[in-house]
Length: 154
Image (tube, rainbow, N blue to C red):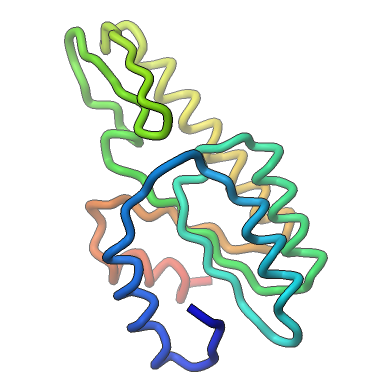
């Protein structure tokens, strides 16, 4: 969709997002770089991603946005299971980006997983703060109103 100003342009964006199917690896820097080159004047970036990518690439993306002086809001969209890891027993996980599968004992990795996810999210929040971007955690089970309130409170 081409960039447009005004709140009435949000509906087509949401409609487009409803019909997208996620696939492939998270590549955030390349599309942001292309868009920054094309946009002149005032613009705001709303990035909706799980951000589960190489943290250096994510950092470069936020630095590009800061240097372009564009307002940025980063929505980290995660499934509640990705946040809480409430699994038990032996479970097989499949990487939806590359199809690799791994069998694990959930109890033996639960604490490590939660710590690493918390550390990653904290790093992402810090990157946003350092680069003058807003960070919003958007669990898939959270009402949209609750997520939007996080933006209004800042």
